[in-house]
Amino acid sequence: MRELLEKDRRITVVPHDFRNANKGTITEVSPEGFTVELDYDSVGMLKHNYCEFYTQTKYGTLFFTSYPKEIQDRVIRVASPAKHKFLQRRQYRRIKYMHELDLTTADTAHKITTLDISAGGMKFKTRENINIEGEYTIVLPLSEIQSVECRFSPIRIEKNNDGSYTLSGRFIFNSNIDKMTLIQYCTKRSIEIDNK
Image (tube, rainbow, N blue to C red; front, side, top):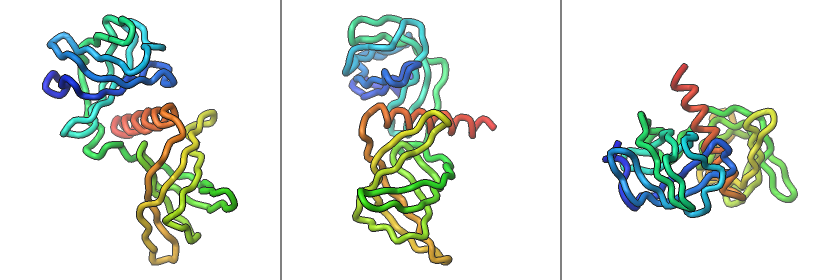
């Protein structure tokens, strides 16, 4: 694990309450663990309470859980994790996500059927002609009580044999909390799928 965590690497820390997600820079790595200097105060983090960690490596997105052994202002000393996994080589894990949703602008609503999503964007089918130069708003339901609203910018469009269109593009988030919520949702769903 030590060879995957390097000094000066950026890392995302998500405590039990994901609304307190934080980012920081790894300042020290040792056999016992590593030290992170957080960008913001360590709100919501408790000693010996597990958090989720995400960081980019040359092998893909590294994901693991561990706990702070010490917390001092914005500096946390984290225990070396027992195990880790790579989510995949692309920056965000893509998962199957089938929903009938509305893609909206100020004056138009397009009916779409989502195919898959990641924290970076989504792919969907539609029978409507959507302007690839536009920017749209979409609400993504994640559970009966939770959803994320973000903007969507199309990147690629293909016309299918049946006359429908398949579009893919990227999300633009209104807040980091929304982005972290979607990262956490996709990660948990991908782990559930892998463990089936």
